[in-house]
Image (tube, rainbow, N blue to C red; front, side, top):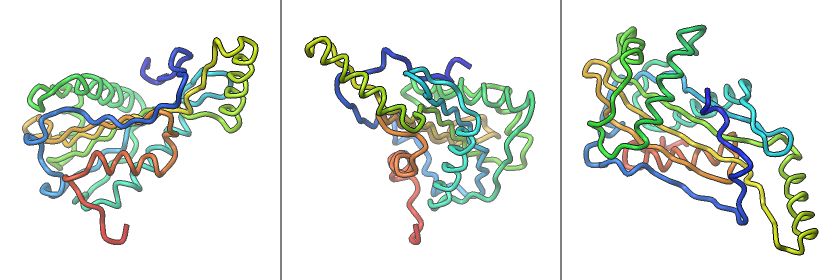
Length: 228
């Protein structure tokens, strides 16, 4: 999928940029996750790419699985009535499901109202295989760097700055983390809740980064458990 690689050389910046973006959907129309009972958590769809050499990112299945497990553990810390968790899908079913979730995330990020979000029919069909009515879907993508890669690229940038007498100097971005959260009513075929979060210059596999994102995503919708 084209979305797997979210980093390229053009993303380098002269300064470090760290920011959090939340979707501007009308919050008054959203359903509070804490008000919904009997929720099924669908296994997160995650696409993590790793930069091993230079600034070229490549999808890493193992790191993507680690990301999904991190997300699952973070969600457990919230007062959300999750009564069922789905397993990782396999084969063609997994491919279609992941494509649907990616397409849904891309389309939803451009909209302003929940009513405008159209859920792919194949995704609804998959969700309706379950007896549960409410489904929590998470999509996460991001870029991380192999150990030592970032320092080498910073060194190259410094060397280039010296050679060009400061006329050209680039500081590579460490990575980025992008998370989308949906609560879907499979009976009505509607999205009840949707938010997204994007943080740049942070590692998507760093627990504190994901915790910060989910805190922003779930703020005013689901509180942390007291022992978390």
